[in-house]
Length: 474
Image 1 (cartoon, rainbow, N blue to C red):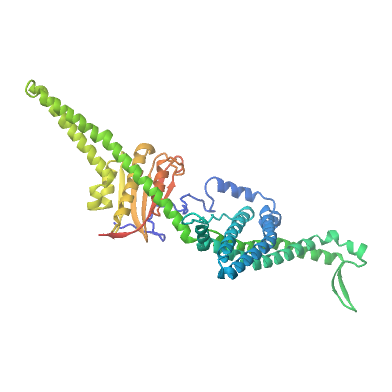
Image 2 (tube, helix red, strand yellow):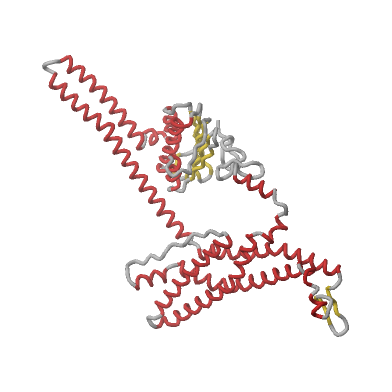
């Protein structure tokens, strides 16, 4: 019977209704188990609502300090960047323009590093460092060529130029709003200065030759303080909106480019693939050396001894040949298991359904297998899916203490979905550096795959894997 799918492309019954994209089950308020719920409880225990206590929070004061520091820092960065770029461009008619431009761009990279550190410390914005300069060769010329070709250097210079006008605007707005709000809010505390030392009743709102308006009676003072309170309460959100633009500038111009980040990711994935292939080769060599090869050596020795006794003691020779025959069968079985571990023939011939059913039949608990695929994925993806399920079923056999398990395979748009569940004791964790699940997650990540483990203590355990869909097999 065809499997029914929900709006997310997942078969019904395979995901918990409250499961988030990160695999953690959440309650109806969105809190995860443990830490997040505790944080929510602490928030509810605050005496003041969020809007009233926001002007006094550390976050607001950090954002305020960030905006106030932006103007002097941006003036220095803008002046330096424009000076060096203009001087370098003007000197390009001579050889001196190249080193001047290279030095200016390199300094702009340092300015970008300073801005990333400032955003990280005051705004809590984590921006990865861009790719470093990679000179092709040694010497000053190679370094200058790398600096001039680096997109990060030019983006840092662009940030230094663009950030000054925004810093002027945000500084002016922040100082005006913040000072107006606090001065009006505290007006009842200092309005006495005017009648005592200024010869007037209070702050003058309007005045000409015939008429003047002063904030000097209790009603006007109270209204002034109330307006000041409203401005003060609105100031943190105004400052936060201004710093949102700063976050976008820092993230967009001072972080790694999408192409550079992709290159770094691919280099990391390539390292994982190489390490995985080397580990598999070592495993195969070890299995051959310690298993089938050792048995074949012992078999050769037994047959040699049987050959020597064939004339003198035929019965002993026949017994030794019989034992050697049993060793041959064992060695053949080990070779079949080893070949199946490299790439099973049933996977190539009949696809995932038959291959996973074969793996499930060797599991120590009953396993229900459902594969709902209209076509076969690419051989590489199919092989990774097979070995992922195979390793998860081995974990169930060894560690879960389960009575039953299930394997579901389906396609959701451009993703191949795998889900292995059991009713065991739970407690599986993919965060451990040396765990099998962590290694499996690394292998999936090398092909842009994802592994999500939902295994509370006491069970049940549900492990979901996503792989990119690449078709091509019929």
